[in-house]
Image (cartoon, rainbow, N blue to C red; front, side):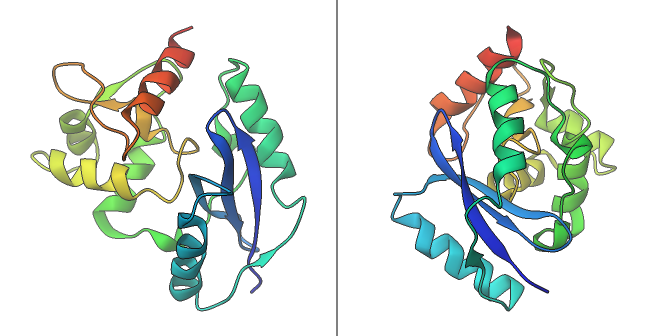
Length: 170
């Protein structure tokens, strides 16, 4: 199996996209110039037991979907690109797949996602799944909010979560 990576433009910078023959395996908002990118690629290499090769143009389809998304179109990424879930398993995978069903412009609390994922009381585990997602934006973890309706965090960038929620609110 081959793995390749490229970068896709976002308002936050050029984001890292890693692909397998099965689909996208990781999309991370770390910018191409971010010192974390080599570390992220090293982690993917370890997890996939293969070295991803840089392939210019590999993210072209994703880049167009992202451009449409950031132009305010309600893109459901999974309708256009396949996700390779190999980096996620167990409850985290179930939670992220549940989150995938949250519609554009809608939000759901961590607790509500836990209930829908079949594990009431696992709100913290949902938060962990959101924090560790290998599919930033593609799986809309930004749509998961606190029970009081406030956005909460988005990794080290809560302003990005607010930006995405505001974008979808129109």
